[in-house]
Amino acid sequence: MHYDPIKDKIGGIVKRSPFLRKIFYKILGLMFLREWYVKRKIKELYGKRHPDDILDAGCGFGQYSYFMAKKFPAMKMLAVDVKVDYLEDCKFFFDKCGIKNTEFEYADLTKIDFKNRFDFVLSVDVMEHIEDDIGVFKRFYAALKQGGRVMINTPSNIGGSDAESEDDDSFIGEHVRLGYSKEDICTKLEGAGFKIESFEYTYGKWGNLYWKLGIKYPMLMLNKSQLFFVILPFYYSLTIWWTLLFMWLDVNDKNKPEGTGVLVVGKKV
Image 1: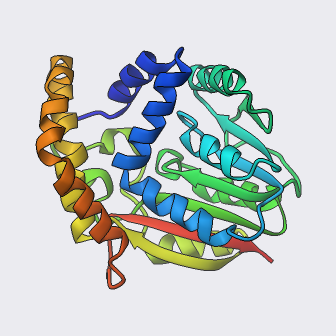
Image 2: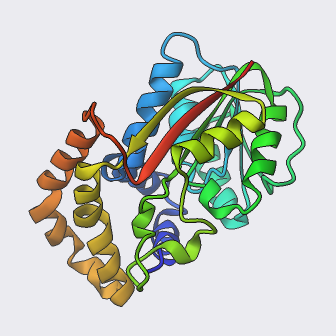
């Protein structure tokens, strides 16, 4: 099962309609558990004072860029990605919305060369696609001002995105590594110079139930045939409340010993 072709298909539907793109962002924010975790952590870190300069490192569809641009209107943000079509769509959307505090540029994270520029670097579901993760962490460190933070959201090594599967039901074909253990990612960030400020597992037992019901099974159907787009509304009408319940339980589970995702914050001291 592959994720990117489905994402690209949906992105193509909303790319030239700001109205549809806003709805798309709301659906992503509602249906993707990682957004619940990432946005909550951003609010915890910057509830009182916003960062002045932000790097969205691997912005994708731009939903986190949009969230931060609206939440921190006085800041300046650079959002980068390696997918030029995604960047062009984001530029078009932000221009249509009159958002002036964000710029979009092509960048390979293994080659960025910023020096003491940003207060906050956000990287959501990117590092599992990059072989030279240590090199990227060092570049994040160099890009941050003193006291700046990096936030990394990525799969863990215990089955992120069904990575433990050896059949076609896995997204592992789009990843260069299984995922990170707590020790692995924290050691690599510390080796780059960061002090670990917080670490938490995401997608515990409730999150995995959500993942299967809300994301995996629909994606399996769409990989079989995109005609299943027609029955998705009916499917979600039957499953949405269970999906949301599992998401809420996972985010509020204070005793998760482990999970299939990790969310870590490092600080440049």
